[in-house]
Image 1: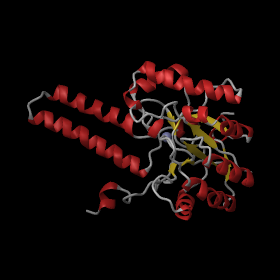
Image 2: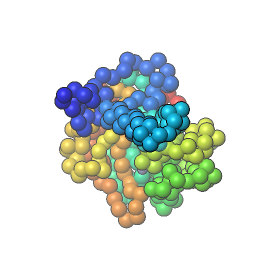
Image 3: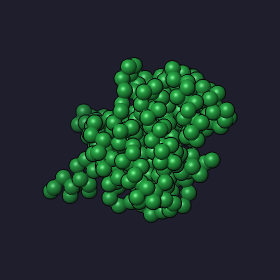
Image 4: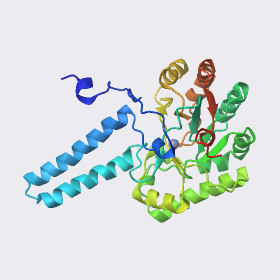
Length: 294
Ligand SMILES: [Zn+2]
């Protein structure tokens, strides 16, 4: 049996080859799995089956092994799959019935790269959402203010963007969320809770509890721009344009979680991406506009 035949999608394919019908409400926008995510889901289910099987071999009663395996599968799905709504409702795309998409830029602001991104957006009359790292906002306040002045959306991507964030307890998660949200509100002058995207797309049960307390709108993505994986801007743009359709939320990067590191590939690809969108009649708007939240 071929790999495609047994798993239903090509190796490396990210988009759903059988997109769901037009969504009727925001509930339908949650947790839509891409091909790779469905593969991951299957792997997780396989892991759970292994737990159950292993427990059976070692003599644990099935009454314990089966619920334990199922719990591990559900938890792992909620933590590791960015579009999963298992732990917290997560929006990964907008409605498909309007000619709009949302470009999102993560990990900035960056003093060198973000102004270039803003220049290009302005040139095309496009808007975008910046999922900013709080400490990067604090270090680049003028750039953050320029994002807001350009009618773009400044959103929360945690304060610290720690690689250990998934091990934070509820209190630490809440403090991290709150610190970043507070600074964003100070800059925007808007009291509404900013949209939130967790670092690396990972969610943990303590983060979910902290998110429930703030009634966060959690946002993933439906198209990964792959701009952290390759430098070739033409390939990045062509690859996005090949996959994008109305309603998609695209993940790109204008910043870095490590000091003195820069990600420029997304900014270089942006004019090509926006030109391609224009040719298709797709308008680049903020995530809130795409979701009709504002
Ligand atoms: Zn990030």
